[in-house]
Image (cartoon, rainbow, N blue to C red; front, side, top):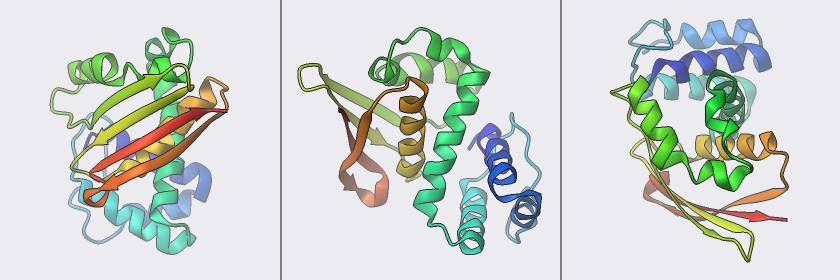
Length: 180
């Protein structure tokens, strides 16, 4: 997993839970990197899971809720770091429909070894709905939900996000986005 995910996770923990909590997470046993992350490095997802588990234990917030909160935070940071991704889209559906064909292509130019999820979509303009199909070996669909919700907030839209299919422990998930 790319280091930018780790550095932004620690930043979110510092902002929402304080420096002491971030320090607790970074000093957890089992972190192969010894809790030292750079945005351009690559790290084992197990380290993120160790820190998420500790944060969940300490905060009494479920891991899915923490991942969604982090996804929302991450979208906000990524849109500031890479404004050209959001500047070309007029709304959430347009932005989200460009993930696989444009955004992931550009990410791979920056991070050649990035392991990105597959994100497919179908839009029904008449119903005001978008079906998103997420596939990843990492089982981070809750992070994807947070990113989607961050996108919706950025475009100031009223869109409901529902999980309509959850398979293989979250490796294959279908989300239905419905405009209200």
